[in-house]
Image (cartoon, rainbow, N blue to C red; front, side):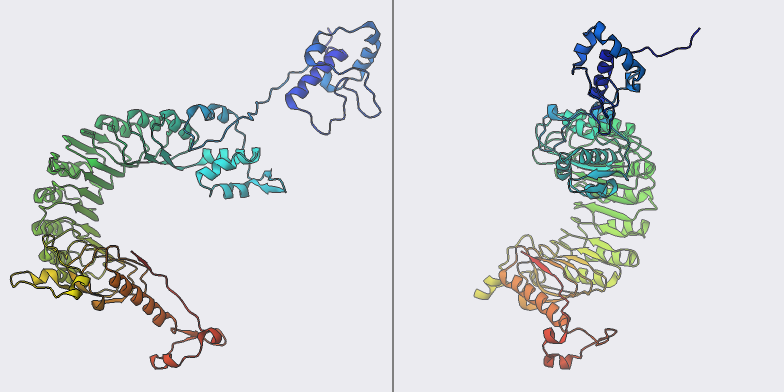
Length: 595
């Protein structure tokens, strides 16, 4: 028995196989064999005419060519031997880049074809950019900083850039997408399938949100950890409580959920062992709320501003204490907040509570402040905006949290006066943010502006409350960074001595007298004066500019050796030489006055 020997091939068949391989692989440089007969090209003149693959397969070998064909078999190259041909994966030259502007799903590329066409990504490979080569790692670092529209445009430059952008989509962990109106669900699904490693997703919905879109998100993002859904004006969120509960239960990796427009929930039961942050807004008339979230750290529930809301907040607070023992931050905004709700919260005994925000509760009084201060003595943020607390309640807050409270928000509290605000800033040394908007004002009376007072004297009746119309505020604090006095129309005098203050809100302070405004805040960066008189805006701009020039222009000078800085005494500041010629440095501080 003879061993297996390769069958000789005629020149016609050799040409067929050679042309077939060239058709698959394409012509390469450096091939020194004849593409027709397989013999070396050097000093060789091929006698075979060029034939197509189909013609060569059907062509018969004539007797005149038998001798030459037998000679060709002796010196045949390896390409003429019958071997299994390994097919290469087809390269799609018609692959289109994904565009956020064009929402036609039919024009989007097929994600399955692209995934099958992926190759190993090597950061050491060099990419041809026309004038030279650029390492793939450098191109990666450049493109990963581009916004999505620019990234999609870069994919159309060349194949190398398209491959880099494809790998960027595959490695993307965060995506922010705006869904236009009347968009098909397949568009969002096609985008999400480009990012298999996506963990953070933010959708700005200009179209309606329903269960189909939620199922598309669940299918396209198997490793999703954070989901944010923002509803634009004119769009509706039609997700029900059962659909939301099913979505949270199936997404076992989900840790953060922020959703707007939750007016159709009705009732829900949320169960998850990984959820840590939950924000739901526009809630209305919930018949049942169950939070089985043992690892929940932060919860925010924003209810609609309708008086016919029938949600039982007291039962909800009782359930939070039993099923969410690790809560640190609580924010609830509802007109149904009352003292009984606060008592239920204190009975929950949440030992780790650090931030408490109970907004728009007109029935929250000083008694509620007493209950909060007794049970939660480590609060860092307290927001009682829209409540009925008074200066006495502010005094209780100062006595309960002198060493922990850093942010205090008491906006829309009509019973608070300037005396209570001054006392709070003096007794809370760690305070960094304070919001007193619409506190020092009288909502029932309409008082003339400062310009009207200058024209004619104001006739005040003896029975009018002068302490509500002419209030003075003096604040001196070492750590305060942000102060908001928006809407304090009864404030006419303001003195601020806050070296670290960088943000001041004076919007709608119409009766503030420019001559009684003193700002000693060297680090002030932004002053909001929308709705204020022009003379007040000019006074603010003058004080800010004078303060920066007088303090920073002649503050220091560098010695000749450059090693020391010498302070300039105040008595010599008027006799200073020209600072531009003598090397004096101006350190300007930017402060924007927004009107």
